[in-house]
Length: 168
Image (cartoon, rainbow, N blue to C red; front, side, top):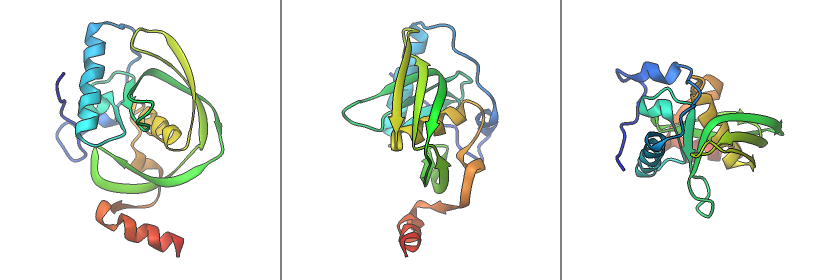
């Protein structure tokens, strides 16, 4: 396994973050290695999700881990369906270090995707898991969370203060 460089906003390679990814058709050892590298990179950066464009690759895949019990999930060629409800909450992004913003997402969704063996899987997700799936899927279409902001970006140092104001 190897740590990959995460593409950051305002870097030379940031243009990859705004490009649409290609469908993954080859489920081989290289893809498994990429998934392992992405998982290691996500954990090292203390993230809950990481999409292939964030490591400079235009592959339609992401990894996530929002639940310790469920562990790491590798999602390839995701298709979101049956979205329900809505939730507005702060999101961050490993490509936007230390910055957060409020985004409206569905509270619940169904996801169809391929696993590392090319098998089709379906899951239901709600709350943070649904939010993460939407955020990472957006990356695969070149959409950054900042394009969906409600209000302004907030530095993590001001996050607690801003949330206190919201409760006010």
